[in-house]
Amino acid sequence: MNLSATLLIAFGMSMDAFAASIGKGATLQKPKFSEALRTGLIFGVVEAITPLIGWGLGMLASKVVMEWNHWVAFALLLFLGCRMIIEGFRTSSDDEEPRQRHGFWLLVTTAIATSLDAMAVGVGLAFLKVNIIHTALAIGCATMMMSTLGMMVGRFIGPLLGKRAEILGGVVLIGIGIQILWSHFTG
Image 1 (cartoon, rainbow, N blue to C red):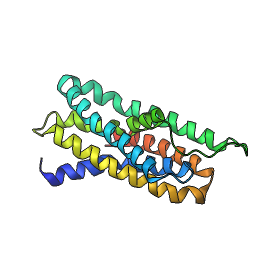
Image 2 (image 1 turned 45 degrees about the vertical axis):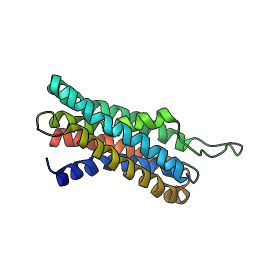
Image 3 (image 1 turned 120 degrees about the vertical axis):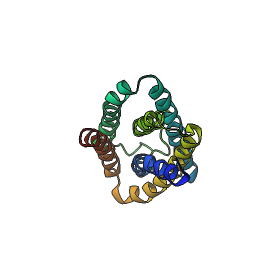
Image 4 (image 1 turned 180 degrees about the vertical axis):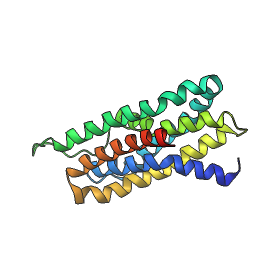
């Protein structure tokens, strides 16, 4: 696989993390660049690890992994999306301070849910002669950049949408999950 193919795969794998990061950025009260970079790092590390896991699983049992990965991604994204929608409809008290950052485990769970497609790519790469380390690093770096950018875009969208930003973020996550199922069954 050449450099341009690797970069196309890397940025293709980062698009769902980018969309999720926009939603995450929109739900925070003016997130700082350090929070965007933190989110980007978490998403990037998870996205770099998942193709390695997929590659290893592909070497062992690709059929089983490919049969279930779309359902796992859909369930995680549906859960996280519903959680965000419920939070968006909750009335907040005036004493409640706006969130300045997301919890580590929430970000990791979201990153895992949006990176299961990278695991599926890793399974496919197990059958090709590629340097999986270079490919995984490219995917992780692209995701880190796109997720950081997504958080900063969300920073500007959030004040325009207010509490609806969390609802919209939840809808986006559910939409990504539905798209994963749709592409599995139609592609």
